[in-house]
Image (cartoon, rainbow, N blue to C red; front, top):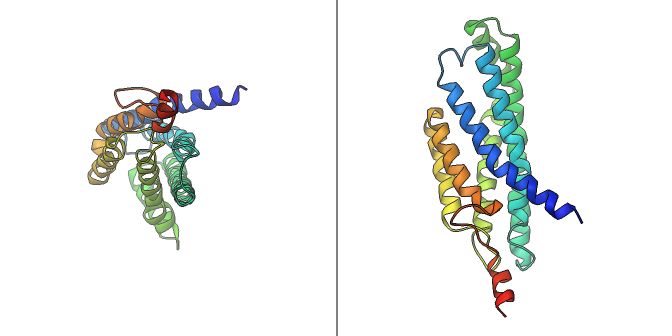
Length: 211
């Protein structure tokens, strides 16, 4: 009986904490010395690691959000998007693991660059952890947001996937925009936890209650 409240609490915490941790990481990156080996690098990347881990329950909540009235095709599409997002998330976590390792063992900036080059030059490391597979996280997340914002069981508004896409484009353009992108993430995901003007019960649930 406590499973639903527990899942709801986890979702609410993740909706708030994931963007906040992302914004803190983005803020730390703007500080002098934070991109060199040392406390700034390690703290910042640890916060990013926690932020991405909190996206795991959010992905599951988004896949389940539209409810049981989805068509079989929509359910399959949702599972494919969820699988893609988790694949990209795992790759992104692997990238952060590499970054934390390098930041821990490097003695200075030159040594950091040398270690990164040694790791990233290994076959498969670049596409798996830095380019191709991490992109699946963003594509899968966006697809799940779209799925949760359309149809009779929608729980999000149309602007949730739009805001998430804007945040993704901002970070792709320049990581200095991470704090602003985190705000986009928070507003986009807030209705999932019942916050903000976009918060709403599923359309199907409202119709059934009205009847």
